[in-house]
Length: 80
Image 1 (spheres, rainbow, N blue to C red):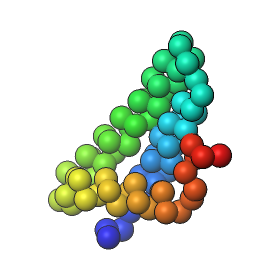
Image 2: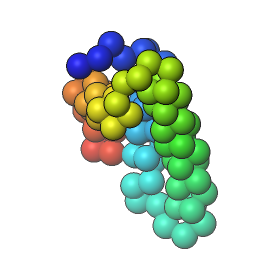
Image 3: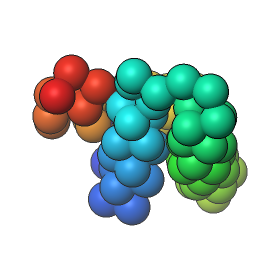
Image 4: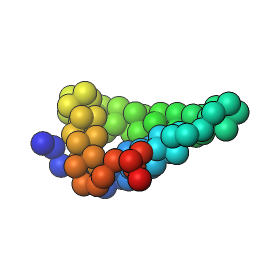
């Protein structure tokens, strides 16, 4: 696994927290939270693409490594 920058891990964690907040929401609250999650998710994807372009790392492999690092480091926030 590649050396994953802390900044990518922090972005992924932020996106996971926003995703977890979707649980139990409906209607306009769900829609608003989904937009917040999507903004965070898009930031992660952009940062991964930038890192991949800068280093030549495979984008898909880097994305999987970031996700695994975050998910293995903590419990799924959706379960809390």
